[in-house]
Image 1: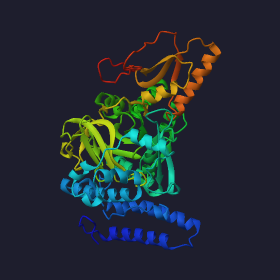
Image 2 (image 1 turned 90 degrees about the vertical axis):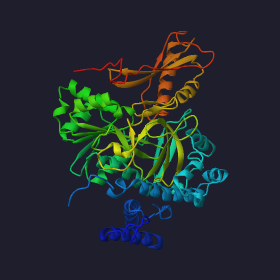
Image 3 (image 1 turned 90 degrees about the horizontal axis):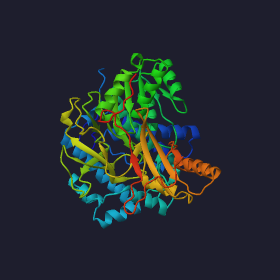
Image 4 (image 1 turned 60 degrees about the vertical axis):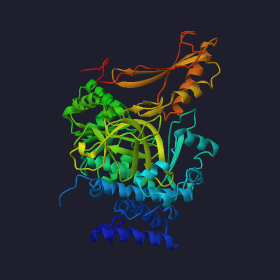
Length: 67
Length: 454
């Protein structure tokens, strides 16, 4: 996986990016999450967004999922 | 594994051409987002012929119209409380903060979402980590924890870093000094003025702060953190290193920080902002080493896009290579040097004389007034408003003074104003340009300095 600057991400970095992407997907698609699941996942996404942004993957804004 | 001295090593040491490429890409995204989400901005961009697709280099940035604080305030007045500036629904916000306005009682108000709030802490992490703060540190915040954003982001940055955080709100200076010692704080965060105030209080208590575990002070809210003589005094009295930072409510966090090498200036966080320095009169860019006004474009808070905002701060930009830390982020030599406008910073709070005047003028009984800034005990900034109240009984005058003090404080994030009645006819009258502000503060290290020594 390369970032928008053409830099190849390390395995660890790629794992963090995939974790973020998975969380965003779950928050977008799932309607059955309990409050503790959704709100804690949102906090995790808000933190992981900083990683993805810092790795130059242009995560955009994610207000539509509540973060 | 060797610990990095940088929070984001890849960005902080990126070659300049790559930083610029990163900024261009982020600018393009920001313009696209803003066009789509904020009609107020979209109309301005359209009028200037700017579209996201037309952004190809940093030169294109100059086609984006400048935004002023007055425009922001006016937009808020037209569509209260936040103006037509939000790019996302209010419901997504988790934080509300404000700063005193340029006119009257209406403050500049902002919202942050969960992601934006996390970003605000992220910016402070660049500064704290860059100055050497690590998870083992114990960090004391001499901060009021109110609606003024101040050190809020720094608090969460320290939690993120893994420090033990001591939130020192709602405490007397004596209680703060005691807690710094009893909890063995290694880092203290405050305004420069208040760092000196705590040192003074410690002396009164018979405490030598230089012998305390405090190793670092993170300063913010006033330019004095980069005034060499003031900084030297703070470092001497605390026996610790002091680093300057500067931020603004309009972006929610800091834009610049001083690294552990203390190069006599503050690095610009250039992977999250574009900072331009221009001639305040013409708007033309000025070169390295020349004094000019900062313009800021922020890639952080998506909820309120900030494009080419006129900060009115005066700075001198120098190349990153003037510091030996290895960062490629340019530097503001001497931090924030001053202001283009008449705003005054009093104990970290922005005070606009015209805002004070508009509140004073709500009291019809007041005939004339003067705003007086002075330095108390050689180191503490104070502000007082002197008023003439002709023909008023003592009881009525006392009520007016109390109400005025309360109103001024409420409009300035709780800043304490002294309000005094003076003899009728004692204040100067003006026919043309009134000069009702008298700034008698001394800057430590300058001629006329009144420094209190032990």
